[in-house]
Length: 85
Image: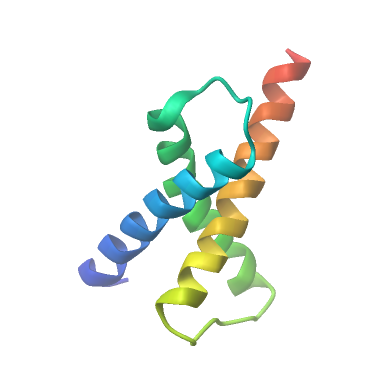
């Protein structure tokens, strides 16, 4: 992974975290928590799509969609885990 790709995933993860936090309201984590989980989710989403052998080569819009899916999955999983504790 090049530095440029890493920076792009972090920036896209921030956007995806904000979008996922907006869509999945009521988490009580605030903007910083949603952004941090969004960055983690962008890498998780990339890993999921890589494992499924689906490579989004459609540009920045595809990266945002993949990162949004990963961020939503991470936010949802984290909220389910926190609610069960």
